[in-house]
Figure 1: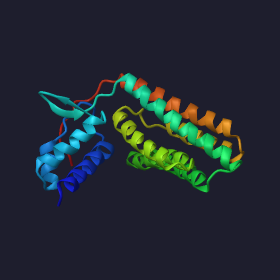
Figure 2 (figure 1 turned 120 degrees about the horizontal axis):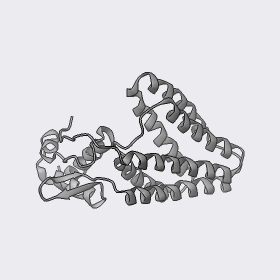
Figure 3 (figure 1 turned 30 degrees about the vertical axis):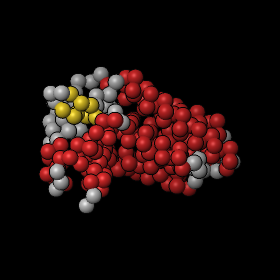
Length: 230
């Protein structure tokens, strides 16, 4: 197996660790454990770690080594500004081209989100599915623009936001989940009515609320972190 292939495998494993296991900001990247788990030397793992470090998702300290980057207020603002521009432009472009219509997929995702919200309130483990539904909804908005490169930018940005927000999400409760579902439904309703400006306004309000909510939780004390992977 080539070095590039090994590095890509290690990169995918690190991304999965960051997005699925949600290590806390400041947590050490367990390079040795990744090497053992993946059955490869540490060289391709370190190369993959370096790629994520270049993206700002990991930090480096001469004593601690590579760690999950601690988000700053300025970086969070910048990430959400980029998200706002990409998604808002996508909705405007779609509304101008397609007129009064909304893809059935969007409506289906809102219906599914409502069901997942109820399930998550009964079983917190179901919140992962709710969060994935949210990601699919917003990705669909950008996909509707018909611009593949813009979608690629969105996907890259989504990873950065996902990792940056790890451990910074508000406590799960009915008010929060219902608000997210209602805001998504408002976007779809406006698109179906052919009201592009209203759809964009609803989307922008939704994104800014999530941004401000995340900033509030940046001030919470962080739990003690470890360095193990499952």
